[in-house]
Length: 142
Image (cartoon, rainbow, N blue to C red; front, side, top):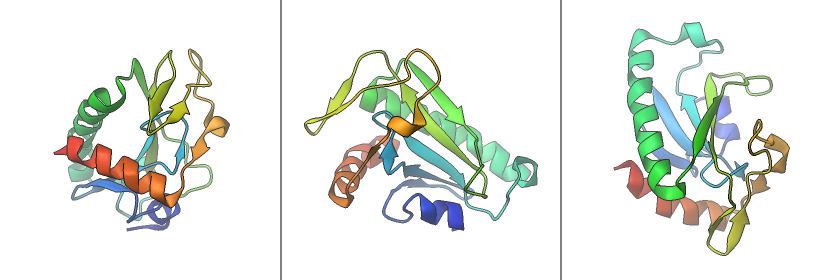
């Protein structure tokens, strides 16, 4: 665990734990199913990750795309490595779609479609909403 993981709600937002990575539900949903793929190390630059972490990242990405495909039926998916505020290696995973998705009576439009994701348009989830989405998404990770 590192400070970036804590910032994104770990352990409450954990969807899948790997040896070198953690998949977290993003507490601010830019689009339905927005995630954070966080390296578990203290690395603050991508090149600092181990070869094993790079190899395992392929498995994490495959699991993410399979789970989100079933959950939200995304049309595109964006992996954003911004690291401007949160120092440890992580990607914001934003599923993209042209039509609004709804879950648990909440609408989640893709405000930036078809351009870049509008990160400021994210809907901040309550603790109960996080728990509900975790309960729906986690089983899709197997």
